[in-house]
Image (cartoon, rainbow, N blue to C red; front, side, top):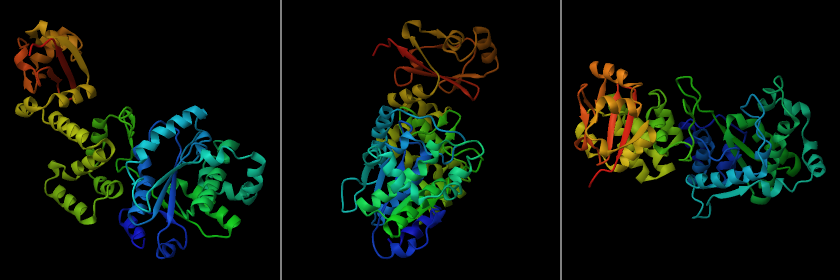
Length: 426
C-alpha cells in the first residue's frame, strides 16, 4: 500500500487527498470505494478514472468496493451539471444498474483473493430509509453554510438547484458512513468534481463515529484541443458496443491528439513507466507510425471488447486508412468488410445487375446525388472502386468483389459507400 500514492502521482491521478492518508496507507491494506449512478444504460469513458483508481487500489493490496447507485441515481448528482438531471423511474434505474455491473467487472478481479472486489447497490440501505430518521441521524450534522460552500452546490445557486439535488450530498455521505460501519471501508475515491461529496462523508464519519476516514480525488481529464473529453461529433463514447461500436471506440483512442496520448497511456492503461517511455520514444522517431496511439487504442479496446473484436477492428482500420493498397483490400476477410459496412454508408444490390455501370451504381448507392453528378465526379477523377480510380465508362462485376460480396466506392477523400452484392454464385 505504501506505493499506491506514488503510483497514482506519476500517472497524474491525484488532485486532492485528505490529511493523513499517506500515513494510513503505510500501516497496511485498506478498503476503498467509488460510486457510479446508473443514469444511463452504459458507463462512458469519462467514468474510467475512478474505475482505474479502484483498480490500482486492488493491485496495491487494498480491497475495492463498487457502489452502484440504485438509490442515489433516483436523485441525480448536481456535480458538474448546469441543470437538473431528468429523474428516472425505479425500473429504469434497476435496469441500468444491471447493465453497468457487467462493464465494471472487466476492470477488477471480483473472483479471486482475499482482496477481491465487491459490488454493492446503495438501494439496499437507502431505499428503506425513513425520512424523519434520516433527517435526525444525518441531516443534523450538516449546516446550510457548510453545504453551500461545496462547489457542486455553489456552482448551481444562481441557476437554481432543487432540494432534491441539494440533498444528494447527504445521501452520498451516508453511503460512506454505512460502508465504514458495515465493511470497514476507510477511503472514498472519485473525480475532482466529487471532492465536496467525498469530504462530506469523511465529516459525517468523524462526527458520528469519532473516527478518521479518507478521500482521494483525481483531476478531471481534459483534451488538449479544448473539446470535452469523451465526446465526439456523434456524442459520448460509451463502453456498451450497442451504443458506441468497437470500431468507433478504437478510433476515438487512435485519433487522440498527439499532445494527449502519453497522458492517456498513464491514466487509462496499466503500462509501466519504462513501457510508456519506450512507446513515446518510438513515436518521436517516426510519428507517422502512431505507435503510441495504436498501443493505447489496442489496450483499451482489448479490455472493453476482447482480443478477437480488437483484431477485427484493427484490421478494418488498417484497410480504411490504406485505401490505395489493393493487395490489403483483397486480402481482408469478410468480417473486416462487415465491420466497415456497419460503420460507413452502405447499400445493397444484386449480382443480377452485373456488369453494373459505375454511373448508375454511384447514383443509386448514394455516393453521388444523381447520374449527372456521377458523370461530373468521374470526369474529374474523383471516384474510385476498391481503391482504383475509374472513368465514366467503367462497370463493376464479379471480379471486383472483395471477400466475395463487397465493393468499396469512394468519392474524394470523405465520402464512402460499402456495397453488399447478394446472389453471387459460389
